[in-house]
Image (tube, rainbow, N blue to C red; front, top):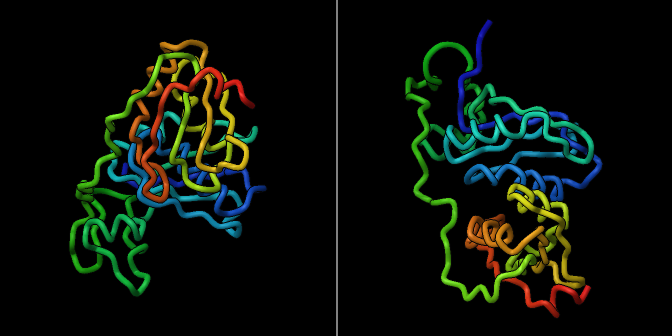
Length: 224
């Protein structure tokens, strides 16, 4: 029986399908981008709970696969496996993309590397874009609450939770009413909030938005 080889594209099934397409794609992006740069998320309501998440390289996809298998999303455990066929996004990165729809005939199951019909190897080159870099920000006086700026417009609270809950001591997140690009995130202590701030400062999220994190001013964080 053929075994699917490790590759940058993950097949995700048992996805909660009661949300609209764009919300689900953003939610999956926030969840999977904890483990590296996501270059594409393929999802449609017609796929009935199935999606494909494309990473920059195999190691990132592997970390996501190991850590997110069985992860409960809206009370439903998702299943994560390596995709059997090469995604168009990966093919465009490594130069094997075809506009006639034949890219997906390239398979990752069986022995050896995936090979296209014209004999070109399917080994994926690493993209030159980095995951996101730290920025020089006056973060203010340390406390247990972070103020998050520059989120993509339309971001939902669930997406912020997915992104920040990976750090220890996470308590909760809340959007600023009427300001879709702003949020507050609470941790159990200032030290734990500081770890999250360092980990996600300058993180590049959907739409090319680079997160800006500071410690919230006490009066602002309590103004709910």
